[in-house]
Length: 345
Image (cartoon, rainbow, N blue to C red):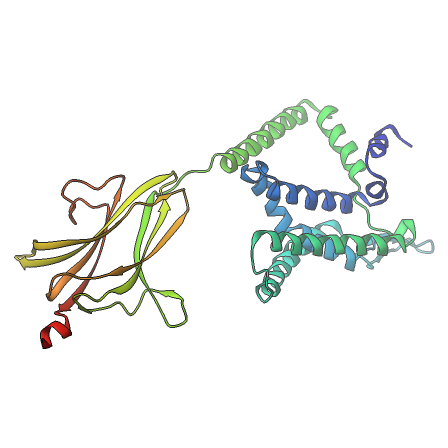
């Protein structure tokens, strides 16, 4: 055994028996599961760095390896007239890589579609189990099919030859110009890797904003942005759902206040003549957290074209809350009639 192969002795026996490329895919699956599920690691850029090839490459490579265990096309010299013949039984490395990406893009959505019709749904753990399980099955089948072939017909990654060629090219350049180009190449690769690592590890925050919306609940219990009440009765309550979405890239303490207002519009300006405070909420939301609150509106004043107004503030509400000083504002135009029982009396 060569000195370079001694590192295999430190690997578990099952990994030592696997071809190098299949062992690499197996390590990729295990590493991704650890990065996505272990507390602490699941919040680091490592989750993204490992997750992308896990989804976009690993399952397709395992499937292609299972379908094509043979080595790529080989040129064979004939003894009679020295004409070259090509053995086309397998596919070469470039074709494997291209097919791996394309097959992964086809397989992963199909796995998601199947999960969508299961009790587990499309969530992180089911996706990890489905993609990881599919990949591991492909690795096992690929390893078994390669074992059945003669050693000289099995596909293998010539990583040792690549290592020797790279070492010779980098450290034993033929000319001074080659040495300069090698240095430029190494510096370029390091800078590119550092740039990608910085982009993943320190992503830009993007635009900061908060979502503020009203919903109603339909007959099936689903929340919809439809069928808002437009006629109310004093003393009777109607249900509504107010929602807030925090996209401020930080923890935010909100205050939402609800008023029923009698307003007057003149010369494109609106004046509040009278208002009743109906409700107030003070949720505290983490970044990317969404909050819903079911509540009931019970009007106390009557009139037509009254404005049911929701005002949102970051932090505490001011002494005189209004549409002008609110961070976000929502309103519905409603007509409030007197209690029918009181009118009859």
